[in-house]
Length: 118
Image (cartoon, rainbow, N blue to C red):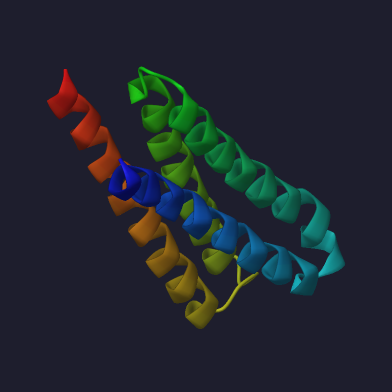
């Protein structure tokens, strides 16, 4: 039980870490992008966090974990747009991509574990 709880909390902690990183990124964006693009990135990141927290407490976690995967993909695409529009540099994009890859892998593993239980 402790191991499963730790794994669930790990992806939540990583998502919180991503949000903290994103807050710093948004703060450094030009004012013209900070409110439009920054708010959208932040809102989607929080949606991801809320899906993971909701999944932690639900008996049937599949729907929330599927939504979490969707939000990871949305964030990834949003960051690609920011990169292509030169709002972020390649190093920041690479760092964010690595964070999102880890989060996505953990969400996928959590989903597979839930399917195995059925």
